[in-house]
Length: 122
Image (cartoon, rainbow, N blue to C red; front, side):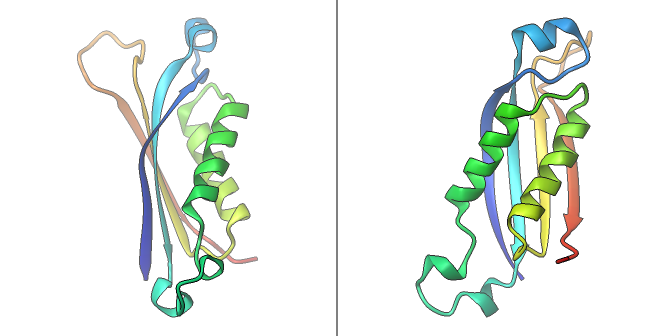
């Protein structure tokens, strides 16, 4: 199996439980790892044989821009399902979403959620 990774995609969102998060927004970063049989599928130098990571980026950007949740876990899970639905040729997708400026009394860089799911190809 081959993998395509798109890493450190920054977005501004309005996800969160607190009113300030929904009003002011905050930065998140998304990593997307897609698994599929590149070796078996890509036999020529033709975009039609692979997954366009430009299209995947656009799918992620549009989803993040138009969906707000209380929980970053909900964003991760629903985005994962959207990618698998939109790109049925993928065998598996792993997403990592990092949320910055989390209103917690403490010192840390970010909170990260990771979700992974195999495509049932139905």
